[in-house]
Length: 87
Image 1 (spheres, helix red, strand yellow):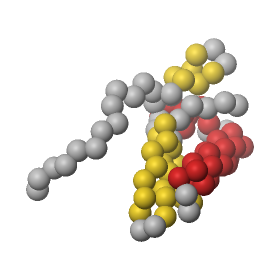
Image 2: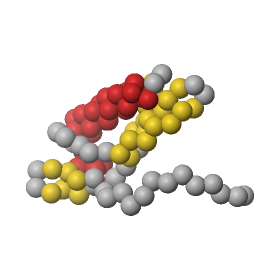
Image 3: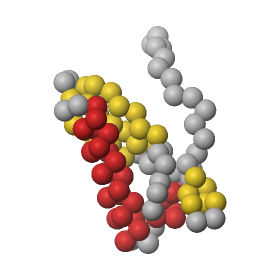
Image 4: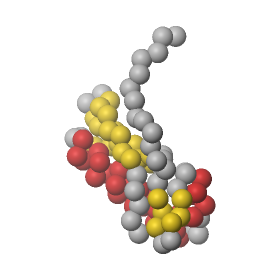
């Protein structure tokens, strides 16, 4: 199964974190490339587990994916922004 996701990578205390949206799956690595590879593997395992439990369709729908024929299409991202707020 091919699944599209948007991955955000950032540095935190000398390590890189990767977040696959909208699935809300995260992983990390010592480099941005390693973090991306780790989150790709985490998404694969996540999808595999949901498939084994018979809940993949429900999970994807809850994450905003839409079925088009045999494929699942991810939600359309309008913006990913970095903003500063005053509290």
